[in-house]
Length: 169
Image (tube, rainbow, N blue to C red; front, top):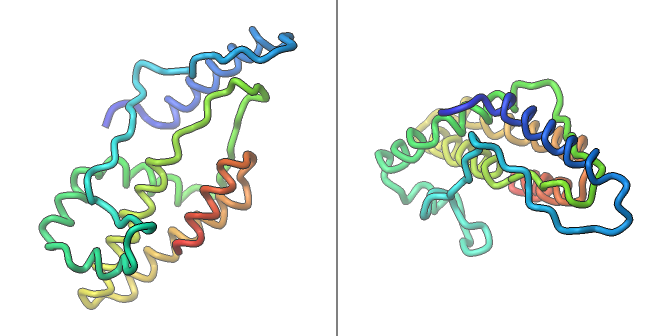
């Protein structure tokens, strides 16, 4: 829903680069407010939508204990997030572009991680419901994206989050 994430990303990058140009000759770091865009939506993770890996001993059991209709409602509510994740998975590369400034905004990775986990949830259900080929295909798509993300991450934060995603696969 809303503005295309690629368009939004380009606008945010342009604003970050303008801010970098305005502050590039400063010798000391002054905390700067993050660049916010009018169309940017802050991600809110739904209560118990996905498994909490640090709290659950068995995420497969967590997903399979849920009613299918409840799972479908979650997937429907997050359809635009999943569609954007599908676009990322289909892209040939993952490229991170961050302005070379200590005050640059760190991108939000929680929507990306949440979308990957929702796809894992969907894959587990497909396998449990007798469609292992499609379920494994979905799991492998997430793993493939996580590997590309890890290989192309350019910041320590992104590298750590990509590695955590890959470990879940």
